[in-house]
Image 1 (tube, rainbow, N blue to C red):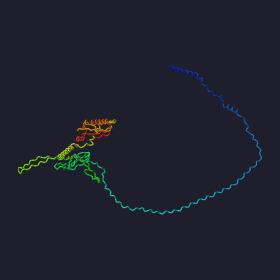
Image 2: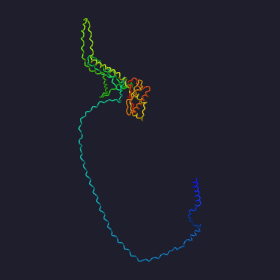
Image 3: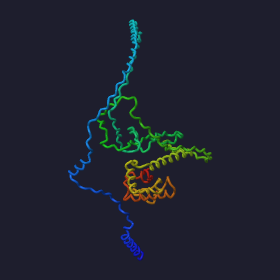
Image 4: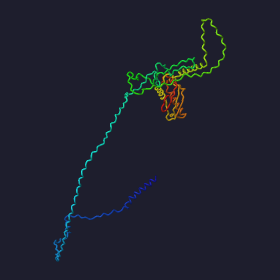
Length: 408
């Protein structure tokens, strides 16, 4: 606080001292030079100027006396006349060059006769016979399959009218002639039922069926018939005949009784007992028939699933399948097997992982659990599968691939 007072008092004291003693140190102002001036009238000025003029001087000036002329100077010698210079002779005229003589006209060269370049006439070339034009249709019609009562992945040609229709193709089996006494029933040749790759509706039937167009002339056949598959051999080969055992001596038979009357009929002899070889052949035939019956019973019932039915099942499961992109399970592909009920529901206890690829065991287990939850969550009241094809989808294997889920 006092510091401020000291500063304020010092400043006030300095101002007071400057006001008192400020003029002491100021320098003297410079002196201004002045001159005294008197105002006069014009007349006074004229009088002053007239008195100041000098007195008048005489204007006449005495001419100087003329000098006496000296003796006449000697005449100057006249210069000698220059000798006349002869005019130079004019140069001789330069002779004009003689004009060059005109060249003699050159005689035109004799006309050159062109050589005869005509070629001998070539023998007439035989005209090549053009191939017959192939009339191709402007637009190729899509081949419509022939309507068939069954649908299968591979089409089968219709069988001959006299051929029996069966599930499997069989060839006519010839009766074995090993034993003349054993008569086997000959097996007739059968052909598979006619099938097509898709169901043909009335709208897809070719319109050209009523008015068939003439076929285009071509050297190759329009289509080749697909060879039939080799039938499964059901009959087994007969086992080798065992060696006959030595016959044991039989007791002497009693003499046959004489007929009572001459008109009595004799009894028919009984057939001999079958030998062991015949028994082996009969057993082989029985086993073959049993195997054929079992094969027929275990065959597929109904046509296979169509691509649309497979896609509907795949889309239904894919709606509930969630893949964690950031986990290792997103790179694992798992294959899940499951058993189905006739109503389209999944037997939950039958779900099992039968294969995996793309990760370790923990990642594969995580991917399997995600697939299992998706299958059970989306089944609701059952997957939409045809009941008449239950034998085809009783057991299903599905492959869960994060890039593309496909169904087997």
